Image 1: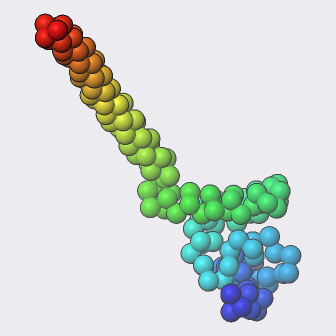
Image 2: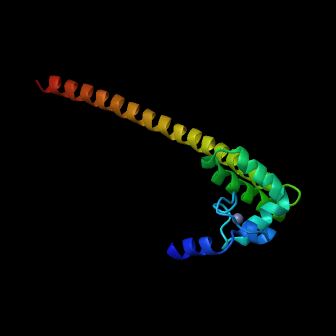
Image 3: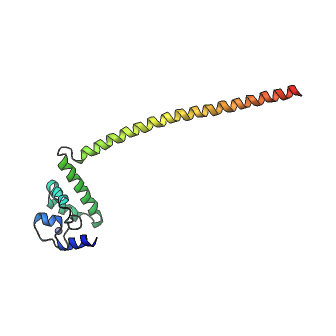
Length: 145
Ligand SMILES: [Zn+2]
């Protein structure tokens, strides 16, 4: 922990290093692009452009910036891996899996309800059987008397 904080105070953030400029203490990028993750900024810059990212971060509240940067970094990474679909490819794959699992779940539920009904019928037959046994026992007792 102490090594990473001394690292960030001594060396420029990944963004300033990439853009070859001096990293000021109030640098917008510094909290989100630490010097030990150079690829994160390189990807975001390649896909969105550093000036667009600066504009976007300045429009956001400070507490929203980290989520925004993580989202941009993920989207940039996916866009570079899959230039056609980007993260939409992964999203539609996951949606497809979700629909499949929902169908499997509803099949399993209907299968389970069949067995539950069957179980209910067994309980009913058992209680009917018990009633008739009681009747037989009563008849036998009456005959004995
Ligand atoms: Zn910087």
